Length: 103
Image (cartoon, rainbow, N blue to C red; front, side, top):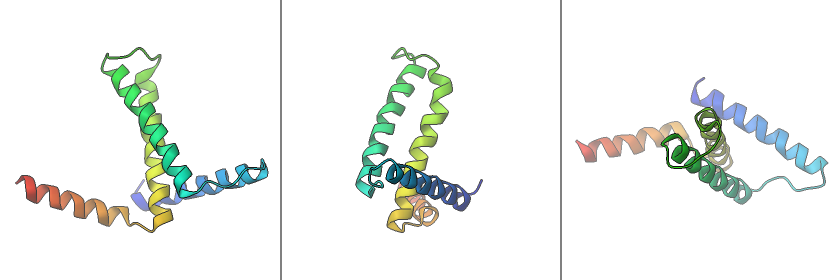
């Protein structure tokens, strides 16, 4: 899938989450809530990486690693959409800067 397709799918899932939360009597998530959820996912990812590298014991860590990476990507895609950030353009710019610095 290309980046635009991934982002559209992430935003569609976020809309489903918003409807689910509102139907359950909760508020839709703000960008702050999304960012905090992302931080939690990054923490989970760090623990899984440690387990895959033999530094922690987590059952099925290797299998769960892909899921957690996808969770983190989902958060980044939704946050970028909410803030109107063109991730493709920003990634190209950032990697170009790094390449120039490191060359």
